[in-house]
Structures are given as C-alpha cells and as structure tokens.
Image (cartoon, rainbow, N blue to C red; front, side):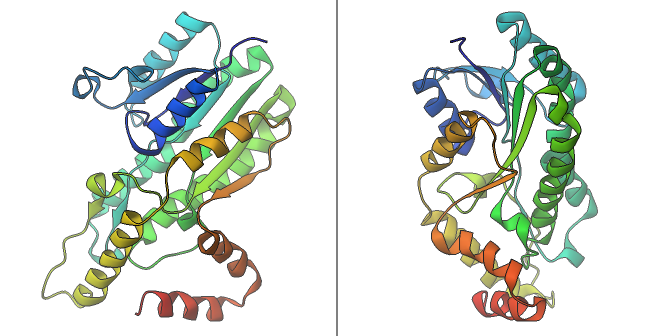
Length: 269
C-alpha cells in the first residue's frame, strides 16, 4: 500500500505536533508547518515547512514543496489556529479580523491550494480542526466560538461540493487539552474601569484553569488517525472529556433560554 502523505498546519507544537508524531509512528509521511522556521532550528520530529496561513503565496509555495517531494497530498489537517478572549464590545476589531483570518480564512486558503491535486488523484481527505467551543456562544470567547462555528458550517458545504471527486471532508472538535495555546492567545486587556472587568477576569481564570488541568493531546492525534482510516468519515467528530462532549448534545435538545442559564451558572455570571 502506498504511504499516505499528510500536511499538518501548526505542526511545530501543541496538538499539531502530537498529531504529526503519532501519524509518523503509524507509518504515514508527515509534513508540518510553522509560521517561522527559524524558531525551530533543531526540530527533527518530522519535516517542517514554513507557511503563513493568511498568505496564499506562502501556502502555494509549501504545497508545491510537498508535491515536488512526494507527488501527492493525501490528507490535509487544518490545525493552525489562534485563541482570542475578551468582551466583544472592548475587543479591537483588528484582532477580531486577525482571528477570522487565521481560524477561518486560513483553512479555506489551504483547502483551495490542495483541492486541485486531490481532484487529479481522485482521492483526498481534509480534516478541519474546529472546537467544541464552536458549537455554542461562550461568554468572553464569543469571537473564538464564531471563528470555529463558521469553519464547521463551511466544512459541511465543502463536503457536499467535493464528494463526487473522491474527496472527503470532516471536522474534529477538541475540548480543552494541555497545550501552550494560552501563550499565543490574544487577551483583550482587563481595564479596571471597564463594566466587564470583574466577570471577564473571573471567566479568564476559569478558562486558563481548564486548560492547565486538561487531557493529553495524544487523544486528538489518535482520533485523527481513526478518521484517516475510515472509508466514510462522519461530518463532525468531537474529542474531549465526557462533560464537554455532552454539552454539545445538551445544547441540541434543550430550549435556548434553559441552556443559556446553564452557561451563566457554569461561569458564575
């Protein structure tokens, strides 16, 4: 059987690196990407390419390198993303646009770059890493929720559009996992005179505590491997602790106002 070639964005750390290491251990040929290759001079886990997900020219160059080396791309894992927190009213709009450029537009740029080759191959798989947070509007994470929710919906549409070419699309929504995502997350500053200061500070503390106590991202990597080896993948997958996955199910069956009360109670707002 021909070795599958996988391209993973945001592969230098966190969930992306875990995915790359696990897939490589299972015999797949892995290429990861990072915004700045110079920051990882000793990276030897798998081949790392420089790629900026907001720059179509950078994407085209990285995709071309993989195709020149391997002649095909079997799997694209759109993992690169950025966190953002803050009261929506006080979050600078340039930061909102940046979050959408990375979390939503970036995966679309990558998909557009690999789809022509996948059509030529008459096969391919794109896994868009979304988030359980994308299934609901979370307080002080509303922009992040919106970027991931939008990626979920566009994946549903893209899946239908490309199905006749032998190309499969799926989303994988992780809950909280122990990664360094907080270090790169944009936080709207907590201003003492802000009417949101106290509830925002308390919510941010809860968010960080949840990440610090979260599970091993290897669970996400194993789920990606399972999807790759599924002939007919589902539209959406979730991975995380039971309560986080249950929260999505509950949202689908409860009246909106009751679910809203549960969110308010959870965050003590």
